[in-house]
Image (cartoon, rainbow, N blue to C red):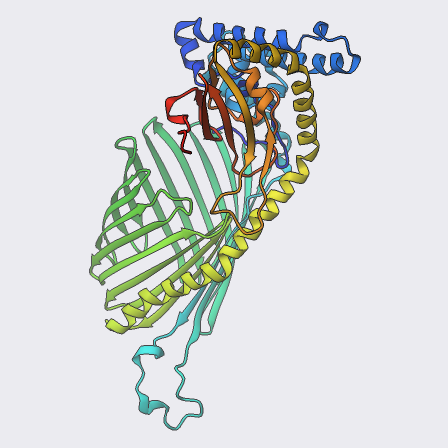
Length: 569
């Protein structure tokens, strides 16, 4: 994946939009060699004639024309060169400014250029290596709420305040880890945890040293101490056997007053197809077992089928998760697990509630486990987990409240807290983005105003030509955010007049705009950063009035019969 731009950077120079050429014709050019080159030359020559400094005697107009002429020339140089264009398509204008491109062979393909760019990016990341860590943490709080469903009323008759069921926290677990890169191939990992259950607890601390030995594998040595498991000495390795198969092995020695407890786990994994993985795992030690599973993960679903034979538990498990293709990344899931311990059925859902937070809830119903509700919140790299045990029996009332309760609670919180918070956060980010890009927008506005002044003479000639043959005349054109019936109260339109720039683009009674961002067109700028924009055009063709509203990012071709305004209208 292409590296993202640094925070706060703003890149508003769209060369495709400036030259009004289609971005996807890059593929046509690679196949046939001439179509795109000719399209670029036509657009480039036309803009050069419009902005050439020698055409203007006024010193100020001459200076403005020179600036725009240089910008058009720069755009043409980038898009007409295969290597520069491939870099620009993948990484934008700033990709061209990365140090090191001068040593790249000119004959490399876009794929090779992408790899080279990523290599240069890695070298830059290596210089920041010492400043980066990867903190991860988890807090788990177990709640015993069985008194809500399993108590007898007479048990509370003689107890003050006994009419209220007793809910208590019976266990807690806190863990945290950080990574400290030592070199480009060596990393130290420090982790620790604290646990308590029914008043008894303990903790441990671990230090691991990981080394990447090659592109195919890495190894790790771990040392630990604590009163939970005693001293620990372990080793873990990972190795890619083939392009579709890898293996991991983990061995450890736990030292305690009862002696040394060895353990070993080995897992073999293989890609069965593009979306399916097969796993085979052996575990040897105090709880020996053999486990095999098949996991299929696609864009819309996740399926797992697993079987384990071992001591003390053997089971079969099947789970399915459906992924909705919405902005909130909603997922619903269900699973069934049956073995010597009994049978457990689980169902639940999770949803993204903010930019960095995902909230999920799962209901677990089993024999003899009873009914439990598990709530999990992932916030960036931190996880908060709350397992709530409701009853040891299969009570319909417990299942009902475990299912409906979280749903009602979520809908209330979504309406009263999450949506207002997300809306306020978006407005804050938008305002911050506007402030950071204010100077750039001011520059683009000045360039657009200068371009409109330079277009006046050309537009006058185009209008005279079009009027002589009852061709295409742009009467009015506006670009920006329009007020609609769905707009918020007191919201005002934010549009600019682009009648002159559009008329300047008319050729042979036709106007063709590509899918590129319209704010990059000559004479255009962005009047409302970060908001949805449209282009509204009122034009005359063959003596008849026409009107069209074109959303941002959509191609536009006029005139069209469907744009015609009826005489009655």
